[in-house]
Image (cartoon, rainbow, N blue to C red; front, side):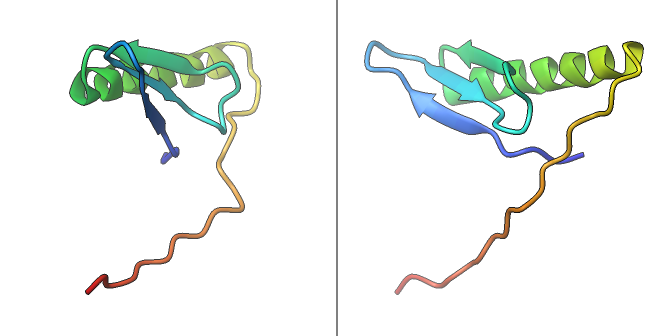
Length: 71
């Protein structure tokens, strides 16, 4: 499964990571790597909770990515 993660740098240091497709799935870290590691764990727990509750696992839809070359 693939999910978009939004990383926001905090003014006082550190990063907050959230997953728009998974409401309430938010984590943080002192640096980008830690924030990404923590949100990966949060996503895994979110998906496992959905499975345990026999709820559907949210998927991400409606996103397209376009690559361009910047000269």
